[in-house]
Length: 111
Length: 116
Image 1 (cartoon, rainbow over the protein chains, first blue to last red):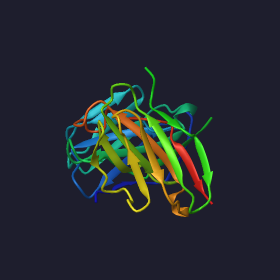
Image 2 (cartoon, helix red, strand yellow):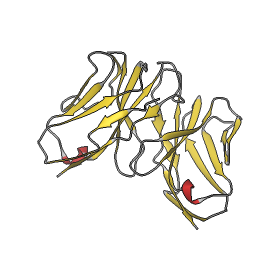
Image 3 (tube, helix red, strand yellow):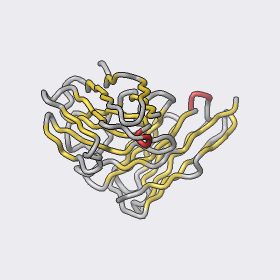
Image 4 (cartoon, rainbow over the protein chains, first blue to last red):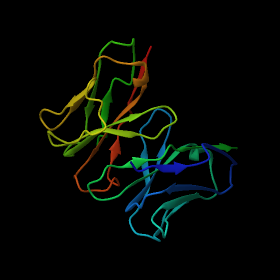
């Protein structure tokens, strides 16, 4: 089945810094999604991407759908302590296909 | 608008025991999903319902897992008998339609299961 690769498993940054996370796949995806999960909660959608090359922002977050349709990145600018959490990429290959999640990246922000 | 409700929040059982989880989706949402999230992994779909019918249960271990959504609203997921490797967070999610691509998926807070 499709797999989404996220690395590294953990990232540590200083408050105020920018951070970029990448997600890659060997398969082509039609939709890319980025979720954040806080401890003890379910994932919450941050950004959804639908077209190759698409660049979408949500406040301090920016995500792009790769041209090859096999990757996506998420950028967080001017990080703040509440950005701490696990960031998952997810994608699917069609309107009726199941959503595949990456393993997630745990972000820590030092004040 | 109330979110996806799940209970219990935590459950500890011994292997070979049975356990059941309950989910009430967002009002009016036709599609309901059960995901399993093992520590350090992303959520993995176990079963998807459209109203009270099963759309996808290809990754559900049917020898021990069962799920139902009899009236097309709330749902229960059961494990019988539980194994150690079933220790995970079980997330319920719902969405308004079948054909969205995940962007309208709303998750509950999950049930954390520990099998000893």
